[in-house]
Length: 440
Image (cartoon, rainbow, N blue to C red; front, side, top):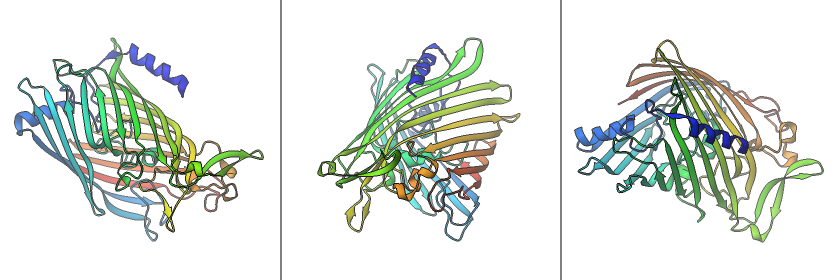
């Protein structure tokens, strides 16, 4: 991936700025030329600094086999292959404060998610704006991690029912508790500069657990470029970003497992040493993403690509970042370290109108790059947490008005054939989703 970073940076420098397109990220700064910035001003001017918004997503799903595991809304019950569910029910409150000059000074957001499964906090953060240099902003609380494109794209605006398997495994719930510094120049006309740097310090395990289980903190950074015209003579827009994640999990056991070569074969090898107790096992990721938008008279064509690779520490049966430290029979479980990579590719096409959209998505996630196929067996110490998955999704989105969206989406999910029982061939876990979204 390193050879692509200079290419991306070169394109960032060459492209011409364009402010006609607004990305809908979870942690956008105030830019009065985009939707969030205009909304912030309207909060102050019309609603006494407070705005309430929200959406609900009732849906019906069908999966190939009863009780199948899926990352499309959670696993199905043992005796069920179809279900109605309320995937998300969000209510958000925004509070903005502007000074006498109309400059933002602080911003506060509270959002919770209510479904038939319970109620959970999704956002609870505040942001302070520095107005001397109009360059810095500090965000603290519970908010989205500044990594990648798909992780930060709001569920209300995303064209697919869920984020990809890799996003959910590495950064479940997308949010974490921490502090983030943003460098993004704000000009007098209310616009922000074309380049932005976010760098933050976080607990690490995200909101998948009740509290932080070690003292190790994770550092996340992202450099991004707003959509820019590729030339003065073309309406085509290009945007891109590079992201880095430097973190880890402190081992609470003397045993750590790593993939090593033995007798010409890779195996999950046990490393037992007193030195492993208290050792920080790595969670280090590097990612790059790019988006290309081709406007036309009746909508637009959009291409998106994102690639992530790195080292992940997790457990024996899964590469998912643990929300609580794993324990079995009162004893601390060993941690498992794997090298991974994965990618997402989107093709989005309006169908003769901005109200109708065709969606095509392909993604893969390989949690253990060193092994594949029949090498993945219990005899070699591997599990279903080492299987590669390829997913092809196709869908149709209809937006009759700004408060209503219909989505029909089918996912063909393929796991690699391995030596593991139950995964010697592709498991039946294709999913069809029919969703309605109401928002205000």
